[in-house]
Amino acid sequence: MSSPPVPVVSPPEPPQPLTLVCANCHASLAGEYCAVCGQRHEPHVHTVAHFASEALESVSHADSRLWRTLWYLLARPGFLTREFFAGRRVSYLPPFRLYLVISVVFFLTVGVPEEVAIDVDGDEPTAERIEKMNATAAALEKETGPGSEELKLAAAKIRQQAEKEEAALKAEEADSEDAAPASVVEPKFGLQDKNAMTDFCDEFKNPDPTANQNYAKLHAACAKISEDGGRELAKTVAHNIPRAMFVFLPLLALSMKPLYWRPKRYYVEHLLFLIHNHAFVFLVLTVLTLLELIPVVGNHLGVVKFAAWLYMIWYLFRGMRNYYGQGRALTFAKYLTIGLSYISAAVMVLVLLALYSAVFLG
Image 1 (cartoon, rainbow, N blue to C red):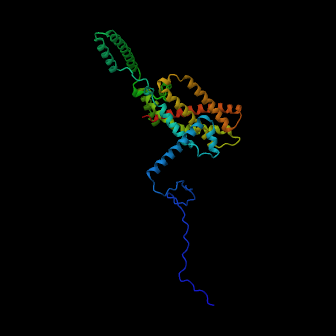
Image 2: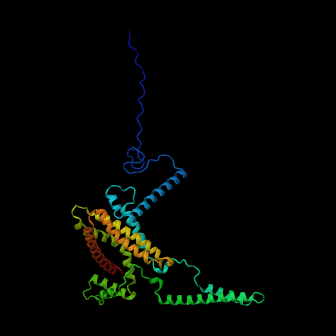
Image 3: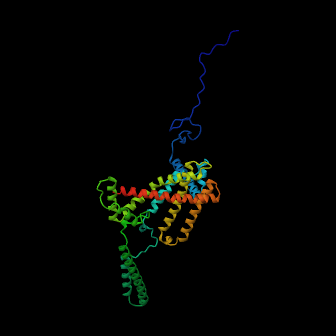
């Protein structure tokens, strides 16, 4: 019996399975997101509806992270720092981004001069308004006939109101003449102690006979300070304070290192703890400052401000207990020590900042 004939054409090979690759970094994909660069795999053509839904999803997701982070920052001392080092980070804003955003808003807010406070009263006295009121009163006074007594009474009330507003307008103009011009208003973060600046500049009144370059810069800066009363220096210092915080916080975190040597703590733990605490303080002070800019509200904030300062003092102490997990007495002793270190570091940084601002003022 003969064997079956061998087929002339061999069967086709089965197709190889297709492997999805990331359009951004060309790495193999095992899911919806790239494990290398994190980009989402979306090969289809986007429509306007897709873009709108994606934008809505992004905004709602970012908004939920933002409000969740701000709530825990305000209400749970030490919680965000604990969560970060426990590895639970995706649900909250990154600490450095949180600090940068809040600090920028804070320094922009406190730098607003009081002269640009929000006016919610309206109908302020002006020369045009007073003139119209007097013209209306004069027209009513000329009316004769039935009911003219009522018209004259209304005219008298309008004229009386015009006289009050005219007196208020004159008083306001007198106050504005005595006050400093708006172009030279010092920011709230300025140098208030003019005597200290005067005493410092007394050492650099006369030119240096040795022609030292640094002495010459200080001499020129002091001359400018004497000329404008230190307003330009105050503005420069206020402008440089946010930058100085990048030196101040690492210094303060370094001073906390000896206080928590057992059990061993990493330097970055102290730094991140301070970053969260400063973000909290800046956020509270920003809210208070914005409320102060509203005259109707700002004049009745005494109790609120007192309560806010008490809460900040308690918050910092409670945050130390929650994160470092030590007893009340030991935490309180370290709380006072860190407070003294804070004041010392702040004075040192401000002195260096003032010298830097004075040297580079010109």
